[in-house]
Amino acid sequence: MAKRKNWFSLFFTNYLGVLNDNFLKTLACFICIAWVGKENESMVVTLASAALVIPYLLFSPLAGRLAKIYKKRKIVVWAKFAEMLIMVVAAAGFLMHSTVLVLSSILLMGLQSALFSPSKYGLIRDIGGEEGISYGSGAMEMFAFVGILTGTLMAAFLSESVTIPVLCVILFGVALLGWLSSLTIRANESEPMKESHETLNPVKFVKDMFVRALAFKGLNWVVVGLATFWFIGSMIQMVLIVYCRSDLGMSDSETGIVMSLAAVGIGAGCYLAGVLSRRDVELGLVPYGGITTGVTLLAIFLFDAHGVTFAILVFLAAFFSGMFKVPLDAWIQANVKGRELGDMLAYSNLITFLFMLMASGCFGGMTMLFDTKYVFIFLAVLTFTITVVLFLCVEEVRMRFKKFRLKN
Image 1 (spheres, one colour):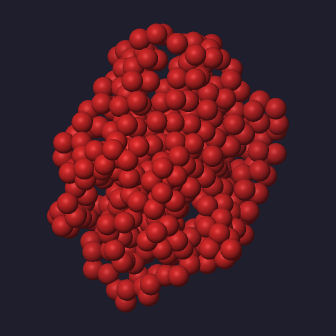
Image 2 (cartoon, rainbow, N blue to C red; image 1 turned 180 degrees about the vertical axis):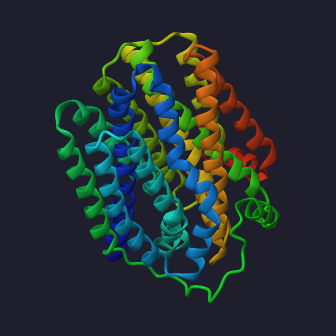
Image 3 (cartoon, rainbow, N blue to C red; image 1 turned 45 degrees about the vertical axis):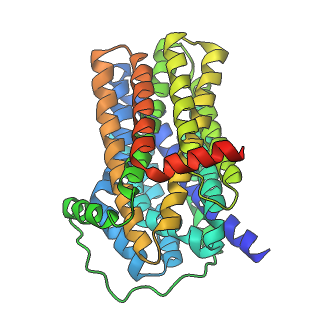
């Protein structure tokens, strides 16, 4: 019973943080567009997405160090306290109609998220033990994507129906609730290290971690696989905001529903992957998830889907991608032991958010040169490619795939 309560405290704290990230970012996309004009729509979406990820590139090494030399629970609590202060900055931006201030608050939320990300994910093993890694990773991601769903839906509907002061109160209220939830987290942590000598230079950190990761066969490819998942996810989120409104003629609330279906799909896929894995780290799910995600994205492009058909295909693509992601997350948790996990999670975060920043640039470039629809075919090809690469380069993916087929 105690472990179940501790799981919920961690999951709910993470859920509220992800909710506020996406509520703020989506509000910025919907509201700031009205301030700057429709011709700058793609630019606002790109900048809002980039602002949330740039801090991960600069501060992931520091985040990894913090997770090694301090209690991870304490880092989470202080990060959630900082979120309340950041929401004050966001509120000032919305009330003053300042796009710069709103984007600055998103940048600060990115910094806050970057600094406590290795700590919150490191707590999964501290709460559930080795046998709880797959379940904890799957449920954590499910709650996270439900947070994306909730934040996106709230922004889509409330941006059209309530005043800006009410939106500001909601932003602060969610941050306050997240801080209170973080105070209830309990975990069996190992003792923090007295000191850590890893570099805080992001470039040198990546080089050092790449070399250290070679000690774990396949780890670097798993990190690239996760980063590619987030590259694809980021581009899907951006393309839905523009494609649904401009190409399919949807309103903000209708666009929010489609984006929310994507979040529900990923969350459901993540949870199912955790259940199917049972107590194992089931890398055999990766090829299934990757191939079916690619096929679904390809179908969106080929069939020129609209309306309900489009929404169903978006949901399915997201669902299968969740099954692709969770085994990779769980594999890192299971194979990197002790406080070194903090560094490897920070390394994975940095590469992931480098890919997400590249996704923002790639989306901006593609929509300038091609019709928005062509983003879907690009993402389908990329999904097939990373699935084949993981199958060929990570021996455990091949082995577990064969065993999973025989077992099921």
